[in-house]
Figure 1 (spheres, each protein chain N blue to C red):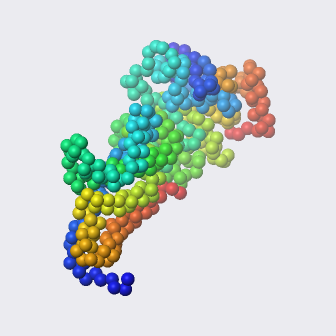
Figure 2: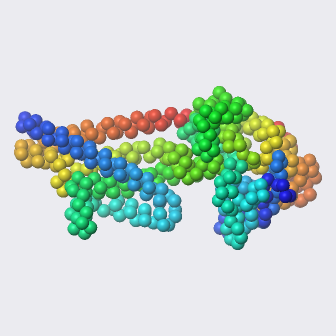
Figure 3: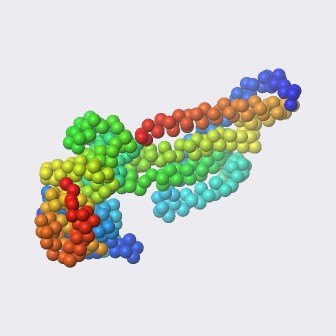
Length: 262
Length: 221
């Protein structure tokens, strides 16, 4: 796809002798919501972390908006242009399983720090934007609270607001509800659903199958560093093409007793 | 010691107070030097990049494992002879103590920085913060909270350690105390007064660090 926002070409990532991503190809179109599922250790999180440039890759290329941002360290060829990287560094927002808010800063300070320091936005402007975003995620009354005073769900929503403050074109969600108490999962998923409805391009790693079914344009099943199957949720949940996908989903349904959340 | 006599020592109080000022000044200059150099060394070691980490490691181990008294003597007697640089007694003592304490601060700071969860660096990275801003706004404020207690202890240790400057004749508190003791033949009483003066200098530091700890505790639940 020529007009893809994110493109991974033959991306290979190794930790020592372990191959975590094995020649992965992936294209994400603008506005698309992709949900990545798969057993633990399948490379889902690493895939996201490579797109966020938190990891090196050994082979392949990652392009954002057609521009090279990451190249295999063992490959020859052009390296990403420093000016391009600077220009694109705000394009990708990421939310982590463990929230990773700055604990010594209030919610407001967490959300305004990067706009002020990275984009040079004035304090007043950054604060106005933060209030808008905090209202959107339902935290307008927590602006002066420190993260330790918030529930997990509130922290995760604050982390989403913090990422959105940089006006990213893509949002990466790395198992963002996995560390939450079950009753707090819904509020975070609701926030993410709102984002998807606004047309945000999203790459979501999750174990919430009900949520994947509702929100995804495509579901990607990964196993052992390989994308085994990519299909719309109706198809992949009802009649997965690959035996490995079917086995994974059956195991999952057994564990959840056939029920599903959301 | 039923015959403690402070009578004649009182005459020398102005000298002792001058000694206190010099000790304070010596402490402040070497502390400022040690804090700045210590942070640079800590970052160099933490970077894990050999061209930075290795010299920092060598520096830290050298200054931690050789006696500060010898370092003061080297700078005072050694530098003028070898390099033709004469720092004077105060300068030599201040620089030697600063270089020495930097090694201790460096290890404390390195532990503090390493104690900040790696995910904090990643959070800053995906927000687009550069290295300096990441340190300044995300990492160091958290590290500072962790290292307050050992840093306070080290500062107190440094203040008392400035007494080593007496060995090269810097008229700081202990040196003045020795002179007064010789004049008055009352070493125990004089040194008791000196000890009280050190307490007066260091105890407020201890209190200040406790106050900082309490203030920084505000963001913990």
